[in-house]
Image (cartoon, rainbow, N blue to C red):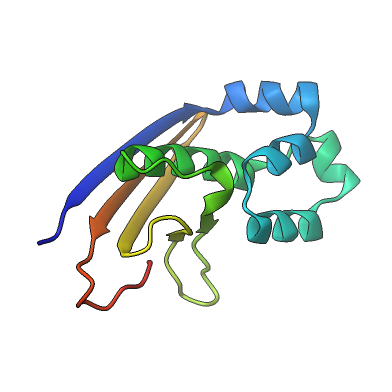
Length: 136
């Protein structure tokens, strides 16, 4: 039998931007990104990004991971257990969320923003051991 759980998060962007202004984009990234995400962030990071607080990718991930925590409860993954890959127009791939500690769980994610707000939702679906398991 499959179990479905939904998690949702809404984030006021200025709250995270204030954190970035105080502590820096790399500090935020190091705190919430998985090793795979952090490697990508560092490859894209530049002094311009740090000075201008351009870290929307990390802010999106914050909202997605908060929604995932709610969907996966009572499982309590860490920030770094969750890896989010955003929509890729060129590759025609949809957003993808994986969790190292949620083996046997399919995760569907949606994230959107408008002005000062980002909203993310995650649907977690447990899969029995006889079914094929992948994350999307």
